[in-house]
Image 1 (cartoon, rainbow, N blue to C red):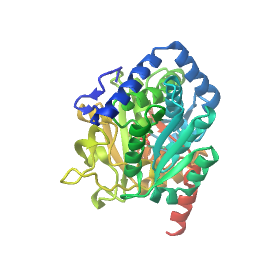
Image 2: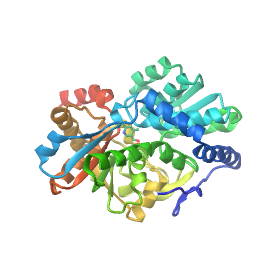
Image 3: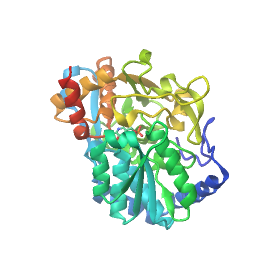
Image 4: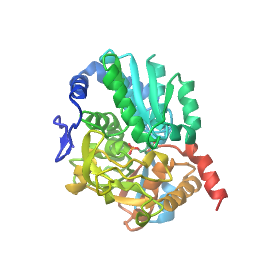
Amino acid sequence: MSENRTGFYGEFGGRYVPDNLNKILDEVKKEFYKCKDDPEFIEQLNYYYKNFIGRPSPLYFAEKLTQKLSGAKIYLKREDLNHTGAHKINNTMGQVLLAKRLDKKRIIAETGAGQHGVATATVCSLFDMECIIYMGEEDTRRQALNVFRMELLGAKVVPVKHGMKTLKEAVDEALKDLMENYEHTYYMLGSAVGPDPYPAMVNYFQSIIGTEAKEQVLEAEGILPDYLVAAVGGGSNSIGLFAPFYDNEEVKFIGVEPAGKGIETGMHAATLSLGKPGILHGFKSYVLQDKKGEPLPVYSISAGLDYPGVGPEHSFYKDTKRAKYVSITDEEALIAFEELSRTEGIIPALESSHAVAYATKLAKQCSKDEIIIVNLSGRGDKDVNQVFEILKSK
Ligand SMILES: *Cc1c(COP(=O)(O)O)cnc(C)c1O
């Protein structure tokens, strides 16, 4: 979507938070829109995108996979080649520069699988910021190596010990900290979710993905692609790829959600496919919820995709039919994980494997002059241990 300062995407988005949090978010919002129009801020951001993250990331023609499927041409947007191995750092880099502008010295963040925590700890190390990461105790155990990475980078990881001891409680704890310490603290949110202005901010910092991809595909092919395919957890890598193509109506958007063990089993995180509009963590969007409106437990083979909500802009894209949302099971993602490794010499993150799996199906139904861009949101090094264990037990 083109710039929208209201914080609403149709009926979705907004800000459903207590009064004192409202004031804090107003301050962040004001500074964000100032920065966006400030050439000095943009120059600084571009400097770190290029020299620290390694942007632009290549748009790679997956020639062998294309030949094998003998359908549409498949291009991979290589976010896996970024420093720290995924797209998340595009956002944390933007937000840390914003926090500096606000003169905040202390950064807090929530993390589930630990990937956003690592991307946050990385930029805090770079800019000498105090860094506190809230993480469900259950997740600190499952993701012990990421806890070590964050600590190595100088962050303090605080295990959250109440409730289900996972991401939801970590978010609650981070918000509580923010309200108590807002004068010198900045809350760095990890996906295109949360109350206004976070979805707009994350869209902006991740849109570098689609902006580059557009230029790169025009250079390689002379035309725009037919399809953009990306995995959807909270929705940041997908919105980053999609948004710069919003007005190019001939380019179709496909968001791929985790169907886990199968939609019919209840063990999945297919929020847009099966959720209903509701309010979670201060914003309105599709939510996987029970009859009382309580968020349902979610599951996916890939820890980065299991969140019961989704960014509000995606809910709007769904209802206005600008994008289509599909789902891919654990099993299908695992097959794509192996197939891309073997065919192209690229081990994708399990999250990204969902997008690859759907693109593989789609390509076969397309003609050879059609073009698909798949967002390779991250690299699979973090997942090889888990996949090893799964394949061993089969
Ligand atoms: C976190 C993560 C995702 C899912 O988050 P989005 O906000 O939906 O992008 C996807 N891929 C990778 C590699 C991730 O780390």
